[in-house]
Length: 197
Image 1: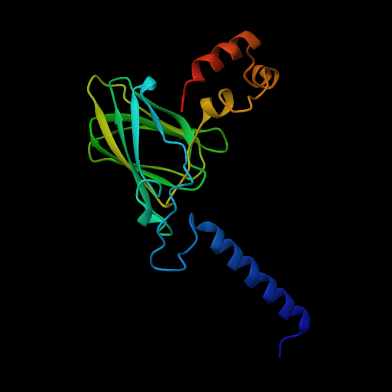
Image 2: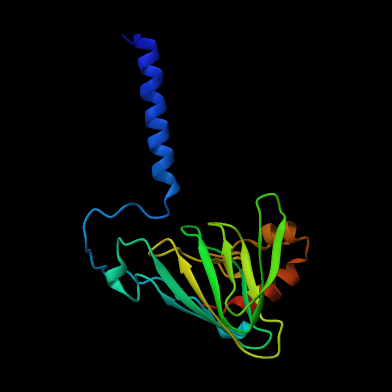
């Protein structure tokens, strides 16, 4: 027979393990086989030709049948010198597969360590969920890659636009102090990023 105190500890441990195992998954397990999404709830698109890259998402917003399935993809096309700027996916791990060309890719750990490498056609690179990462085509030809996510909508936050093009805007004093730049430099960056989607 288990003592009441030991039983309480066991119950608490089971609840903690259950909570942790449920929070590891990017999307919760589906409760039904099919649940087509309502696309009237529009979300922002991720394309930035100003920087020489275009992201073509294939997530629940484009394919409503992905709702509750916990997966999505995107194609990223890079012009020579094109950059998919530093960004995060708060709800998903990204696996990047290079279709053709060569990319310099990297992410920054929570200890501010840059993990960086050059990947070529057929190579795969993994970006952990929520970490700031980027891709850049430093070559002279175009590059295309496919990104796969363990979320029907991993979300995306581009660091520069998040900070400098937020509405209502982040105050100049916060940004100038955080980046150790003048208010005039903050305003110049804000004016350049104002047109971004």
